[in-house]
Image: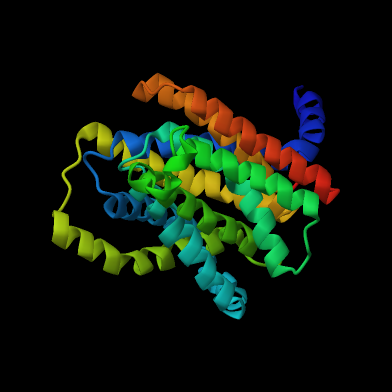
Length: 310
């Protein structure tokens, strides 16, 4: 009885599938910033990253292990890229963001995410040796000014005394790693089992994090999170780590790294609302000015590059 309407809806939504996946991923990742900031007083950054990815590895194992034997050979043929994906996307990116969120507001973190498409475009130009037009460089310069405005709390002259913005710089470094991860996802062979790729990347990333985690435990001891903080770690392990990451990988495979990265602009919109609702953070004038410059620079870069999307 309902087969025809359901089938019709599926046909209508099919072309939008990558976009819907990316919107879902952006919503999950906005929650990543807010929750990481919310538990920062109880859980140090590397322990938070380890907890998050351990939960993800456990959840993915029953699904990935039965397919591992069939999917392992193609992965071994791309082992260099696999190690890069694990290092940039699992071991480094979110860990650096969590370090930054120890001292910087979640609002800053999600607003700085607006720089991501610019980072992807710069890396793509460097890796694939496609020179950018002068107008594109100018647009990127405007975006960088916007980032500096946020990082320096509206006082760009403080750029040479960055103690107050050190957390923001850690966040930016984490995003640079994510931009590299996004580029590495491009042109992954279609025969690669994406679920196996994700699980193996998570396991390798956990192994890479072990030395840093041991150092953190030696310096700070074992964390003792509250029930709410533990629930936050579970959320991070399920939604940003598994569901959002898998959705992002599928979308990149379908529409490409640059077009997918443009959807990351939704993270500031979702994240600022969540930070205000759950953490009581408020936006200041310099947030609006900085975000406007970042987005304006992005549009300028797109137009100067002669492309519809980055």
